[in-house]
Length: 143
Image 1: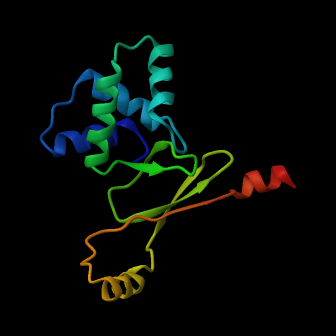
Image 2 (image 1 turned 180 degrees about the horizontal axis):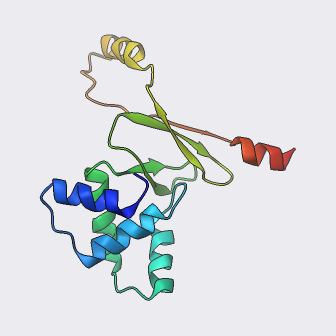
């Protein structure tokens, strides 16, 4: 998902209303290269003079998460963030310094999931993996 149009197409494809507020939130999200928090989006809304309330912003974020065009991340700080993504199974590698987020296709988890299911008796329905580290650009800056 690289632009706001993709978000709008997902809304339309799901038979949902495309409101001015949802368009504005989609445009804000599309402008982020890495992860972002609701608070960061809220500040951007305030700076832009847009009339999107906090509850509307949060509902739009949750709706886009349900549609699979953003995913909620749990950051090491305990804060929640969101990241744009394709609506397919993938995982994320997140830079702890700059927030750059990269999607990783194919996870190699099926064997581990089968083992965990066998040991615990759980029927695993889904999983999520987030890896945290320092991206190549930040590593160069540190060196």
